[in-house]
Image 1: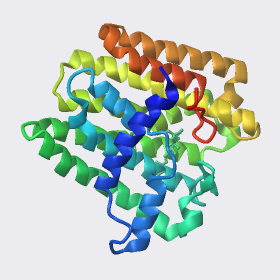
Image 2 (image 1 turned 90 degrees about the vertical axis):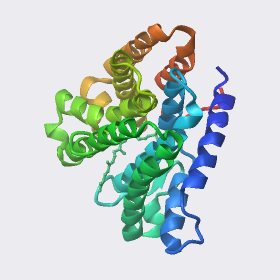
Image 3 (image 1 turned 45 degrees about the vertical axis):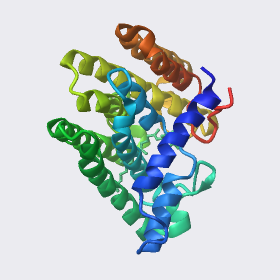
Image 4 (image 1 turned 120 degrees about the vertical axis):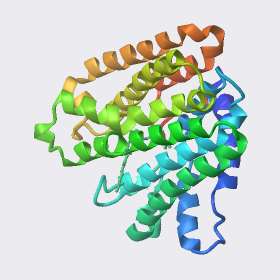
Amino acid sequence: MNNKNYFKRWEKIINKALNKYLPKETEVPQVLHQAIRYSVFSGGKRIRPILTLEAASLFGDWKKIIPSACAIEMIHTYSLIHDDLPCMDNDELRRGKPTTWKKFGEAVSILAGCALLSRSFEILTTEQTKILKNSKDNVIKLLQEISEAIGSYGLIGGQTLDIITPFEKMTTETLKYIHLNKTAKLFTISVRAGAILFGVKEKYLNILTKFGIALGEAFQIADDIMDFEVEEKKCNYAKIVGLSRAKQHLEEKIHQAKTQLAIFKEKGKNLKSIADFIGENTKSDKRDTTK
Ligand code: GRG
């Protein structure tokens, strides 16, 4: 796979759809819409919507799943905006640019994150049902799974333990919980979304779940390895289990993820390449898509 062209192609498709589904900067309240667009179009890799569309293409026409892919990217962006806030990670830079709160202030950033979350559900219920008119039950199933994956049993649960656990109390078990909930559950619903909407058999949904969890955990381990290499002091997986074991676990997770795809034979090759890509190079601002 030529990474640069591959990611660029998907980026174009996803950005065009996001542009259509997000309010214009000129619409009232302008500052809120500017903050939303600033955050959504600031150079994210679009890994989650790409996974959604690639996994959907195993079962049907990926074009029909674009609203859900965009909704998932909106949720991801909301989580990053809030994660960067002074009361959370207190980050001033993301993807090499000022974070949303640095540029628009804390209040507008909180509101932009909340608005993106609401918009994601609006897109799922309006735009996705317009395309899949006879699949309302499947859309409801997807809404239920997304809600669970990003709530207190998922993204927010993982973020809570990440924020409140002091360095000296952090254990491998707690970190695994954080990785599963903060990162892997959104990955998992990203790869399951198309299959849910197309109403495929439970057997395939289970395979996608195993793939999504292993890939999401690998993604977070790789992210932690990169963080560790940049700043050794920060508590993360590599710090807790040691760098070489973290690298070994990363390799194992990528292998585990790719093994799940065997059943899809040749059709699974792009998902396999994405898994390899995550295993080799992860961090957004350092990610090299020129290979
Ligand atoms: C509700 C107040 C409130 C806060 C929620 C849920 C949450 C805060 C934060 C989410 C936790 C989080 C940021 C998880 C990190 C997962 C991760 C490694 C993100 C980076 O993903 P990439 O590299 O990002 O795909 P790009 O930049 O490519 O979009």
